[in-house]
Amino acid sequence: MQTTLPERLRQVREAAGLSQRELAERITRDGVAVSQQTVMRYEQGVSIPPADYVAALSRVLSVDAAWVVLGVGSDAHRRLEAIRAILDEPVVIAPNAGPVLDAVAAVQRQKRGPGRRAQGGG
Image 1 (cartoon, rainbow, N blue to C red):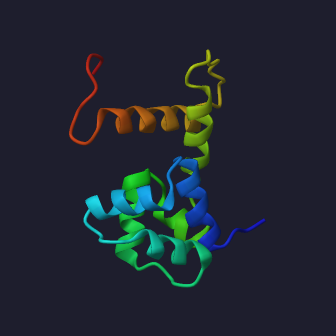
Image 2: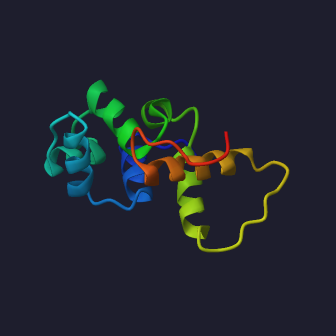
């Protein structure tokens, strides 16, 4: 079933475990001033978010902007949510685990923060 833009906006926020207020604060820190009420209006479909909001949301939550806006492309937020749920459990890597490994790498990048590189390896 195809979801609507307001539904996808809510899904990515909830998958990140953020309240509307927390998301507004993160997006504001990213350079796009937004209030909790504005986030609520976008999620309710009362207002349409501008491109700079979607771009900031994409950066802050590491989601594909095309998926958020159009419902096509990567749904990485779902993979991230699944990885977060199992990080404390042993993981068996299947031959088709590429998307899962991409999600793990994204979580690791989030934990390291911007501008920091992984130690060791390459």
